[in-house]
Length: 148
View 1 (cartoon, rainbow, N blue to C red):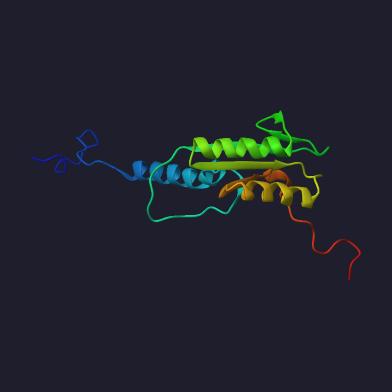
View 2: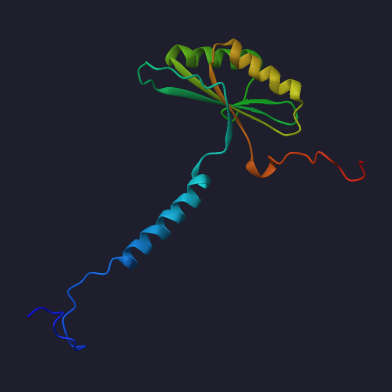
């Protein structure tokens, strides 16, 4: 006779209960979906062209920083405009794909940031990103206190 014919509590249980397993998998899925958005690197990507064909290339990245006092830095070292242009040209000669990561202090005038973008684009760099701090990326209140 089978295990079900015996109605005693001492009988053998032949069924597998998968409900706890499904519950655990659903909880893990929800945790993954919630945390997946925080894994993404925070930056504003600008001018990222796409192509249907092409070969994999090794990208060279240059970190350009504009400080509040007007100093220009390349990968943490002080540099002037001519040196920056020469470094970009050298990177373009050694690699077909150059990516510039631009970081500017929030007190740097807008015109200075536009100037560095112009320098980068004029040297033939097609891909660049502007680094941001997500905590400070809050838009100003469109209706300040006291306005009608």
